[in-house]
Image 1: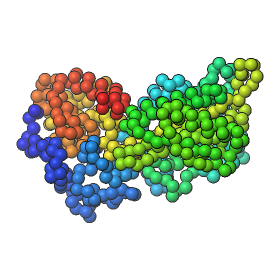
Image 2: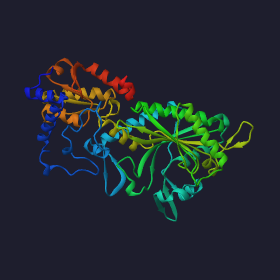
Image 3: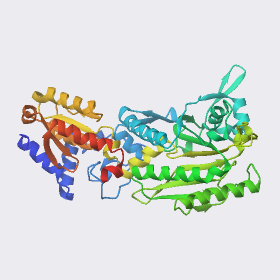
Image 4: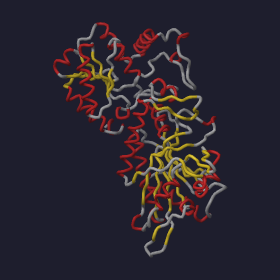
Length: 470
């Protein structure tokens, strides 16, 4: 045990204990230290957020086996210093370093999954002329939700989705049936002029990044490609801690493109693919896109709430409008079918869902700061910097908690920022080349620095809540 002062040992003991009484003590201790007992000095509550006065418990107590309170991701984003929104830029997210760290971890994770599944990553323009969107049909159907820019006599628009752009890539060069299926993926920045009343934190915004993917294939490939995507989606959702999800088949709307025979075939193929994966989709009559039916996937969180995220859609209309074709086995030109799909829907949306699902305390691999390095006194500051550098060199996101505050206050500060592990270093640790690893549940172990790095590196590389739990 490091040579803590009596005050520090008492504070740590108070934080370690999880009984209701000591949780209240920890709360009141922090409240006194931060003056939150003086309501007139408390900051105003944010939109839709609850105040610390509404619940006499620490804001970020471990939530492994407890139901979440009404903690809103908008409030968590501010308290955890992840992002902010501004009244003069509605629906536009300002990602702060901690929030963008989560964003990048998820992006890198999904990029790896998509590459392993055979998708080639592409990048397409954000600003395209009105004529382009007219050819695709989006100008007629979607222009009220598109941000427009006047460039002399030409009208340009920011893209609301990437699908027509992916057709342009497919159309470059002569395609053979032997190349199909061709799979493209893009982490594309999209803009949609959503009504201000429909905006909701980072779940529904006007600017967002979508995990947009498209498969160009033959009719005989459709069922297998959709089933392949559903398997990938299920694997990703399990990795994120959502083993259970719901699926719905949205069928033909009243206003639609294509004939009934095409819709019959498309709806049957999506249903068959879902059943091939052991799913029984609920039917949502009339909720399909104008160009084709779709399967929609909804996550269920710890409170039993349902969140629609993933989607897969069949489309024979866009390839026709943009003249996509390939050379069939008999030498004739044929139209590919296009499968649109996304797993997250948007990165903001999945991050918001994860935060609310976990009550702000993300699993280790997703935490923006994975380890907080805290020297007991300034005498160990240089060693603390070396420890932090060793973690960073191993790919572990480390942050220094080496300020002038007492150790107990720094432990509380790291706890409030939902940092999963602390590496505490005192004189003994510095002398022996060790660290004291402290988990959020209060358990603590002194280990050599190299072993600490190896432990946390393995934990970080697990890359998934499911793998971490196993």
